[in-house]
Structures are given as C-alpha cells and as structure tokens.
Amino acid sequence: MFETTIAGSLPKPAWLAETNKLWPEWKQTGEALVEAKRDATLLWIKQQEDAGIATVSDGEQSRQHFVHGFLEFVEGIDFEHKVKMGIRNNRYDAMVPIVVGPLRLKSRVHETEARVARAHTARRLKITMPGPMTIVDTIADKHYGDKVKMAMAFAELLNAEARALERQGVDVIQFDEPAFNVYMDDVKRWGIDALHVASEGLRCKTAVHICYGYGIKANVEWKESLGSHWRQYEEIFPALQKSRLDQVSVECMHSHVPIELLKLLDGKDILLGAIDVANDKVETPEEIAGLIAEAMRYVPKERLFPCTNCGMAPMRQEIAVAKLAALGVGAALARTRYA
Ligand code: ZN
Image 1 (tube, rainbow, N blue to C red):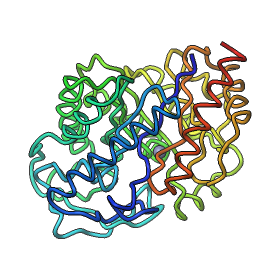
Image 2: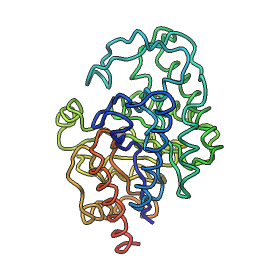
Image 3: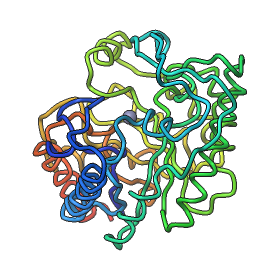
Image 4: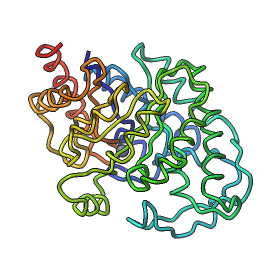
C-alpha cells in the first residue's frame, strides 16, 4: 500500500548535460553521448531504488525536453526553421518547430533507455511520453490545417511507440498533459479521445499526468493569477473518470488544488503529488504522511500512490535525491499509520 512513483523526469548529471535547465545542451556527442545517457539512467534507477520508489522511471535522461525528445524521432517536422509561438494559451513564448508533411515515426523513440532500465531493475518501470494535446500546443502546423486531426496523427505515433515499450516489459505508460489544465473544453471535446487513441490496445497500466507546470517564472506567475482555489481539475476530472486510463497524476503538495476534487476520479488510481518541485525545501515525512491522510478522506487508500507533483528535471541533483528519499520515508510512515 502507498507504493511510490515519480512523475517522470530527474535532473541530468553535469557530465551529461547543462544542469538546472529545462532545455539543457548535451555535454557529449556521438558514442560518448550514448554512453553518458545510459550511465545517467542507471544512476537514477539506483537512486530511486535506494529511496524506496516502487515504480521507477528512466528519469528522462535520454531526452533534452519532454516534448521535443519525442518530436526528434518524427518525420514531417521542420526543425531548421523554428517559429515563435505563444504556448499554453499564450502563457509564454517558445521557439517551436513546424509540421510540414505527413507524420511518421523514423524509428523507435525510447527503445534504448527502456532496454537499459528494464535490464537493471526488478521494480515496476514507467516510461513517460508527451500527450497529443500538449504536443500540438508546442508545435506549429503548415500541413494538417486542423489541430484535432494533427493531434490524432500524433496519437497514432504515440500508440505505436507505447505498444513497443509494452513488449519490452514496461509496466506503466504515462502521457503528460499539462495542456489539460489550460484548454478544459478541448479536453472534453477531443483531448481524452486522443489519449484513447494513444493508449489503444495496451494491457499495461496507463496514466495521465496533469499539472500546473515547472517552477519557471512564467508558470509561477500564472499560478499566482489562479487565485486561492485551483478548480481547473474540477472541469476535467468527471471526463477523465469516464475515460479508459487507469491512473491520474495530480499536483497536490503546496498547490491550491482543493483535495476533495479527487473524489471526482472515483475508480482511478491517484498518483498523489506529494513533493513540490518548484521549491528546494525538502518535505518532511510528517508533511507527506499528512497529505496522504487528507487524500484518504476522498480516495480509497489502496488507490493512492504517493508521487512527485511534476518532473524534477531543472532541480539540483542533491535536492532531488533528498526529495526522493523524503517521498519514500513519508509513504512508509503513512503505511505504519494507516495500512
Ligand atoms: Zn508536470
């Protein structure tokens, strides 16, 4: 009970990439980069195991950014002529690539890191991928002329990669959809349908991670503008409750999400965000166990899986290690009290 997991990304070691950045430059090239990615994946498998994390991830050590790490493997995209686009409903501008032709996978996307991770851990393994709605919110279009059509085309590519990951022994496939908290009507109209296309035919656990973004300035300011009660989840949870996805990853520690909203996800596993990734202060086991106790008022305890609020990519490595340890100890404390 209260088995732990993480939202996905972990900091990259200084010998792999620039540190404390969302879009770090690699420090190696060619074969040396391949080796460095592999070594960093192993390092984080070990750190997660030592912290008592039950469902571990590759820590996204092999991708530069959570969306573009997937797009690099897709044919039909022009990365040479990026354009400036307001993303997440113009919360911030990003230089984004352009879809210029039919989308096709050039090759497998996460084959290597899944194989490395699977070979070195007996724990359950999660691999994350960007969700279709978040992808189409992070790329310009000169080919499809229709956002939904383009999202469904991406969803089919995600599904092909997800099925291949499942064949490699991956236990959880998670789609990251920070855009779900921004375009609530679109989630209901086509966002969940797109996730169903992406997860079609999978027998492993399927998850969706929805959050309010990393601790970057634009996100911190946006969060401040949302007031004291964040009710975005309230609009989309009833639709997610009816969806075929098994698990929903939600930001709860230090967020203004009214915790009773979790009851709208009746029947789903809740990956309960119990580690703040926008703050270097390490949570105490008492705080984490306290949050679990609160969530238990609305979610059956066997459906609660303590997790991080979001990815930890831009964080200092030693802070991330300390927060993973706190998550493990906090969940263990909850187990002794409430199991
Ligand atoms: Zn997130």
